[in-house]
Image (cartoon, rainbow, N blue to C red; front, side, top):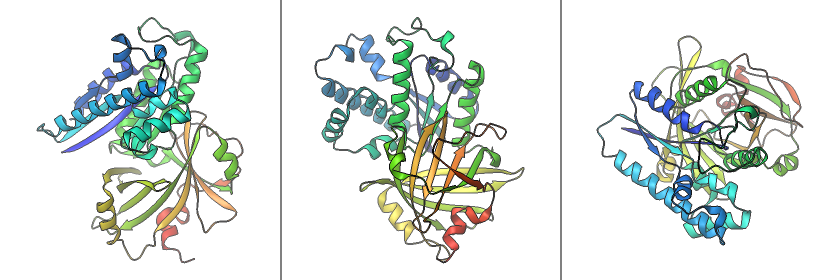
Length: 364
């Protein structure tokens, strides 16, 4: 049995309700049992307990977050009792959505009361898919009529949407799907992104890599839509030709999550990536079995949400005047948009000497 838990989030009038129907149809046909965790805030608002009337926002957000976590845990526990090979739990918003409605002091209060940290609260979901509000780029379709809990003006909807993207920036699998498409194409883009995450083959050309000049780190850290994470990864031996197995520690300030990823090339220039979460003990045990032909890779990653794309900017300790930037695109022919302040030296997509496995084999 494999249970995958994802978040569908987005600003007001982004298409989440319709997206749930598309997900149900698409992934039931792919052999998944699909479970849905309804949006907790809407349940409370519809039940007469809206957050905007509270006199103590941090206590309200604490209760919302506790209820979300309890519901998710119940769905996970029930899912484990099913006789099914593949289970997809779809959360209509995740716990980090609440951060967009809190200031920093209130958010820290919630973390303290839950005895957790931002990394654990954000990264306990396997992937996050953000649908951009219609108020950005499709204003003529923005409406309050189809959701009794919705009250935001166009300007407020844009601020909420920006805040949500900022809250989730730093997650290892965040995808932002904007309004460059018509609505049906937007839904198809969502299904494509989820399918790719679940291990469906995807074209190699969808991932572009650039060698860049060493960025202004302080400027990056000042951006609200940029989060830094520390990454330590090692490689394991595989008995399957063409397969690379990587284990990774990811987090910051002493708070980490752990993953094992298998990457395999198949026919037609495509790849499959399968990822599973590890406990700390599992990670440490596998780390002892690391392939001696590869040294561990350590890097500082800056995750940047901008231009409707998600950029990973990696800074390696052995590089003093350059860094690496990777972009996930919806299609191979999509126009490349470089973030402001980033200076590209050249594109290195497909060049083996700029892959992590190659760097791990090079003696410094």
